[in-house]
Image (cartoon, rainbow, N blue to C red; front, side, top):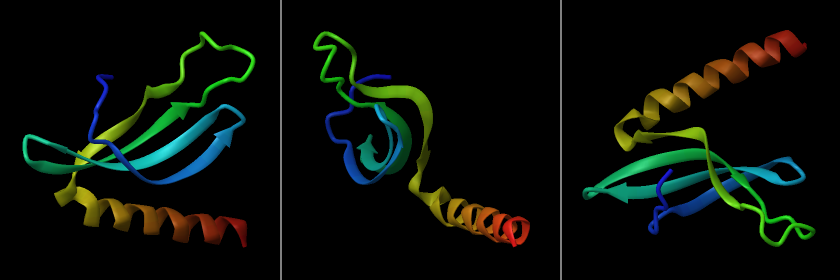
Length: 84
């Protein structure tokens, strides 16, 4: 993944000790995109190791956001049914 200097992290959640899932906003060709991606965190023991974004994630145009939120709400509803 190419480095994107205008990536603005909005929220993040820890997945493992050295991995975070970050939700970011970015612009490309004067348009707004949402990027949800895994990031490898720096390892204190391995100074030369990689830290930064991975290929595990996706980016989509802001116009898809309402449909994406609706999909997340449906997942949440189904998960609540199964956990009850």
